[in-house]
Length: 285
Ligand code: CAA
Image (cartoon, rainbow, N blue to C red; front, side, top):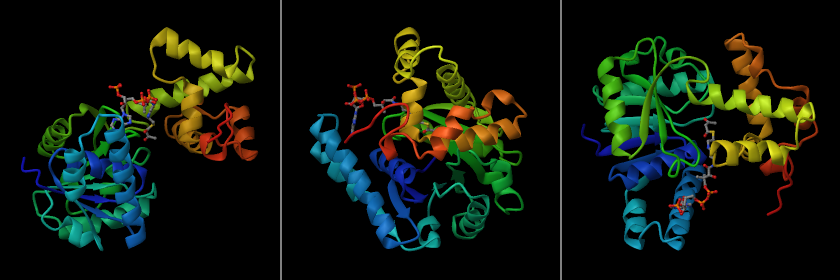
């Protein structure tokens, strides 16, 4: 697949990370956000990440410069999508917003472009419903931090064509990701397992089975996880994980995903994890 130009819609943490890995793989990237300031903030995120990479000796100064030179901000969706072989949407998790974006993208992108959404919670099938380009719409679910996390879930909607899936897999491999193919079902393969573990760990704290630190140690030292489920909940945000848990409990009719009372209480008290300074751990920075 010709991967020359990639459009990334949304310059937040995920969008910036996706733009970065595409540029590092040699693509020309057009980065769009609702305001020029938001798009510029995305470029700054990339520059900061690469600067840390140079500091750590993981990225050369030449690679940093070449990567940044391949990222250009654009003022509207059409300008980004025109001529792109791949469009990746990383906008907020609102169904109507994404449906609208994909209608615009379908009009502006070349007729053979792959149109991907980075959604982690909305059904691909619903995003693509009624879209003239539904066969080319696919999920490309990246993980945070995108440049460091190897996994890429390719999520197949009801109308996604086999050729679209193949193109998405080829693209994921070009980015150096470990690609997996998942049916469009709630939580895909990753969040469905991750949230289950997280909610159970919180129930264990609630029941006094062990301290948060020791439950995390069980997974880190017993199972080789890079980070325990409670620390990860702090990093992702308790409110974010609670919302995903509610969504999965409802859509999968499965009580194991339902947020425990302790999680609800902590969120109500504003103990949201790293971003609020306190969750299962104290965060000072
Ligand atoms: N540029 C290049 N390389 C960098 C870097 C940078 N800016 N920053 C760090 N690295 C490299 C380090 O040099 C190191 O490389 P080696 O292993 O070769 O030494 C590696 O990345 C790990 O970095 P650190 O040792 O500094 O940090 P760490 O051990 O804390 O690892 C982490 C960082 C890989 C992110 C680890 O903390 C981790 O795996 N965390 C869990 C992340 C996770 O679970 N993410 C999923 C969230 S859920 C999600 O995203 C889905 C959703 O839809 C909500």
